[in-house]
Length: 394
Image (cartoon, rainbow, N blue to C red; front, side, top):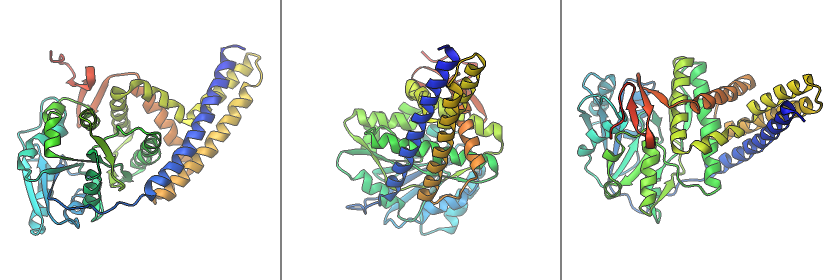
């Protein structure tokens, strides 16, 4: 058997393996959302840190959802890099309209020249925090009124040093935003559900990170993350290295996903992919197998090539694996849509999303540069962000 024939059978096997993975992940997503959060044993004061940057879609509604929590004592700190940031007006308006809420607004020391801009914002905000429990949350998240109770309850579980949550994508725009949200709902979230089921507990996600102030100090504080791309993962890893675990909050905030065009979507997802690659390059590369539909397409193409070379069987194996992958993927997506209460997406868009995921992953694995908020960085050793044109620090 020549190379095209062998490749067609190997790719067909990968497509079938990916189809099994898709079915299993859909079942695990269903189990994940079936968990209901328990109330906290006690409700100590909490400081919520919300770094802002720009006037994002649904920004005011998202922030308002955090200001209207059914939690007895919450300080909310909004932070921007500069006084001309449009998000500042939104934060100030909420402070005026909700006098009953304990809201502080911090204008930082300017947008940093290098390093992680979100972490720099948080460093500027931290001195305004008054309470021992800190909850870091992205600005594009929306939650219900019991969110903080669920977070604190998870943080109070024995052995937990940091609490974090997954999230569901909500498209805030046209087709590119829909594709971006689908990448979260039918790619990222199911992958974490599988990782959790097999015992991995190393995921720490920027949507929600809650920890105590002394825990943060013990792992080096926010300063230790200033130049890191994967700041959320590394914070969780540092907590685990100190003998504490990461607790997954049984609550799914909803993230506003806005992608203006194909280029912004692709650049955004390549940055995510290279972030994952900086954490676990071998694992990220191996996860290509979970993309069953692209594997089936490649199996069929290799089978046709084998048939042209006079080898039989490869094309049939490729075609059958592609049909199985298509049917399995559609079943998995429909199951996840029901579990997560999502709008039903057309089959052609589901397939386009999978082909896009394959292209994103292939590009992410082939380079070390990322675009972030209009700037380009190179990922140095250990995930350090280096502005393009500069040398890494010794």
